[in-house]
Length: 241
Image (cartoon, rainbow, N blue to C red; front, side, top):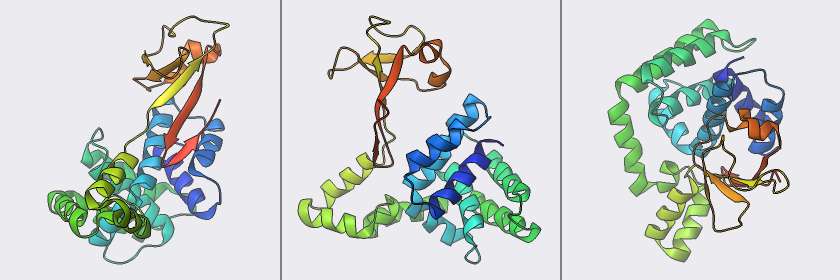
């Protein structure tokens, strides 16, 4: 199973489950036999689709000829997220891999639905600039769509603090979180040598990770030199230590 299949399964489970996103992700990755790169990508895709859910649904409504069933919608949202929000993946590669995901799902999409996914994503690719502009326009008329926040919540904020401050709060709320670690003073003094991190003002044992790629494959993690202190994902505070 690769990163996109893992992210797809997580999105389906999230829609059907009462569990928080971080609980689903931790449980899934704990039992996954995928590479570190795929773990990172599946995490990015899963949280990214949740963080931008309303914006992706808006884009989906613009490129789909009809409303797809939920499994197909999840696949399309994964593709649209890669095209419009994940700049590190070439758009053509994102379309190809997402269509392959639609073809390969066990008991999932039919050949006709895979063709539907292909047509919708090809349209998104062709009209990407126009669609990005239309999505951007919702920032003024329907900002809760652009920032993927509940309308009632945005309107409550706006009534309290005004539109400018509410937009800034939405933007901050959608910013990917930093990862902080706490070192084990019984095993090390200072920063782990195999980790990119900087000191914080919170505590001498607390460090802010500046490059999170494959941190859970480092020797210092395996040897319990440090633990994740706190992180914030999709508005959910996760205390792991």
